[in-house]
Amino acid sequence: MSDIKPVDGVAMGVFIAFFALVTVLGFVAARWKRGDLTQLHEWGLGGRQFGTVISWFLVGGDFYTAYTVIAVPALVYSVGAYGFFALPYTIIVYPFVFAVMPKLWQIAKTKNHITAADFVHGEYGGKLLPAAVALTGIVATMPYIALQLVGMQVVIKGLGVEGELPLIVAFVILAVYTYSSGLRAPAMIAFVKDIMIYIVVIAAVWLIPAKLGGYGAVFDSADKFFQAKGGATGIILKPSQFTAYASLALGSALAAFMYPHTMTAVLSSSSAKTVRKNAIFLPAYTLLLGLIALLGYMAIAAGIHVKSASDVVPVLFGTIFPSWFVGFAAAAIAISALVPAAIMSIGAANLFTRNLWRPLVNPDITPAKEASTAKMVSLVVKFGALLFIVFLPTQYAIDLQLLGGVWILQIFPAIVFTLYTRRMSTVGLLAGWLVGLVTGTSLAIVQGLKPVYPLHVGGTTWPLYIGLIALVVNIVVTFIVSAVSPKRAPVGAVAGS
Image (cartoon, rainbow, N blue to C red):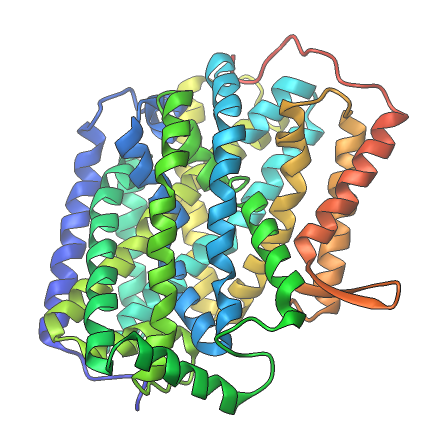
């Protein structure tokens, strides 16, 4: 079966219609929940006025991305049960959000912090540690934005359209309405995106198995496929995969809300209570993710064969569904790229402006100039991600995103531990951060940029997520160095106050 099909006029028409709807919503969003968009907290955090419903869609919108819809089924299609590590990861993360993020939100609101690095500056002062946190967030986010482009590129290709022009047009539109409306744009679009994705997934998990003889037939086909394939694949996890699976889930959960886009979505909430309510209701997305992952098994049962596993979902939908639904599904996945890409670029722009540009280059910057600088940086970030996809192989973005997960974990002690203990020092946190980055990056390079490292302990090998290994090293170094260096004292001048 060919990965590429001729352009389907009906599917493309439906796709364009829904994309146009989202474009209109993006520009209308500037007038929604009106605020002074010349102020960074209004443009970059939506004025901190998003209630439970809006926040639920917004957090879900930037946490479950186009690349999630494409990559999770692709991984399950390729390796079977191991690809389901994303499920326990999302189950672990919400209790963490419930316990930690309301406390962080309260401090950020009280002291007018806009970024995680603002919070670190407010607690420790200085420029280096906040800059390290900001730089880590920006660098880890760039390939993540590029992967949203990959997701969009895959679905556009599934409609039969080759080349980068549609991608460029889509992201120019995204750039303009994000510049115009700030965080309000992805917040409004997230409503449409999530409703469309739920419709697509519910229709898929209901109708596709019915056409394939039921779920029993789907799992039986997948089981036979992986038995023939051999190796570490299968619909049941192998004992040798247990520690890798568990550590990937735990490490990914700890990293998830350290990223600028998820942090931005949390800090834009209207209250700490809103953050807690969202942590209670967000597991509904975990159910959705589990259903999305099953598409990998359905593709096997449907006899789908592709050169790249990333093409599995578009080819499966093109095989099973009528043209109009293929266009609708493609639009849903493409919009699932726009929402997180917008929030990611805003989060990165906030970090650059507040924690790199202002303290290191222009300390006397006015609030209005600060907001305009962030708007320009958000354009540069999106343009950079677009150049990345157009001129470099997609594999680079995937490899860098894997490294990004390892890197973003290294700011965990500076943000989360700081909420609960005063035993850490600036020097200790910087030392731990640096050693963690070097350790994680080195192990990843040794493994050929694979996420798991076989740790040998006492004659036993434990395959573990590299990010988690690096984080443990980071924590040990942080506390050892902090024990012999001056502890932090309350900082008088708070960032952003």
